[in-house]
Image 1 (cartoon, helix red, strand yellow):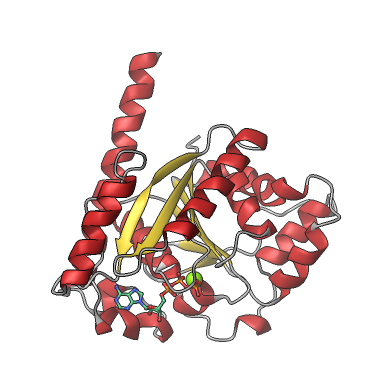
Image 2 (cartoon, rainbow, N blue to C red; image 1 turned 90 degrees about the vertical axis):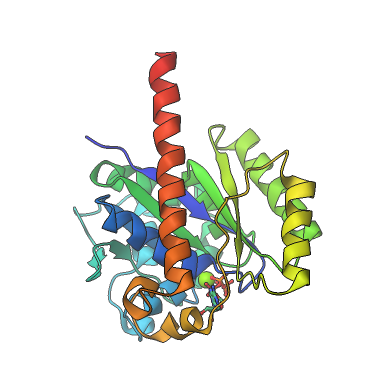
Length: 273
Ligand code: ATP
Ligand code: MG
């Protein structure tokens, strides 16, 4: 049975391209033949809307219901709550009930690993599980980090929030020490880069200079384009909305880069055996 690579897409700063990356990397991987599950772990439900469900609060079963079942020690049915998107990915939607669940996590047993228990149940059916996190480092994001093998950090190229990144790295290290020792940082993805401006170019250089020797920075940067911003309410990926555009091209290349990293990792693991 295949065991999915679980990747959390995290940055506590809002509006940096987490959801857009989750959708387009996920669909990119599905187009390459991978079985992909996208998990919306944000009560704002942007990913759920982006995948064609404009009224998440009316949805019957969401990630919050399944996490509640884990907390109550109830069985989860095979495929329960999982929806299919026309572009080949499965997804688990979210809605506002997730913020109520986050509050109730505080008193739950093994509160950091509720999502992990769910993910471990479905892992065998997928190659990749991508978790779209909310812009905070609260209990839901800690649950995502506890469930993940890797973290992908989208970061806006024209806005270097060094303090924010340090805080995020601190949380990742803490989760690694206390809950999930195998958690790796996959890399920083520079998003919404407007490479015509000197500022963005300088920021890109600065990120490489400051973090390049500690953390991998993906070779592919995602450029800024109004076409990408337009897709939000359409329920389709950038590959459908603007297939010839620069953002679609960048996400295609990112998909290849992610697959190449994974291939290399598997190869190294096999050599160690
Ligand atoms: P939040 O923290 O609120 O969850 P986020 O980090 O998930 O935000 P997104 O929702 O992916 O960020 O993107 C924020 C906004 O920027 C959205 O309106 C989206 O359509 C837009 N956007 C994303 N990527 C690009 C891009 N490459 N070019 C232009 N606009 C983009
Ligand atoms: Mg988002």
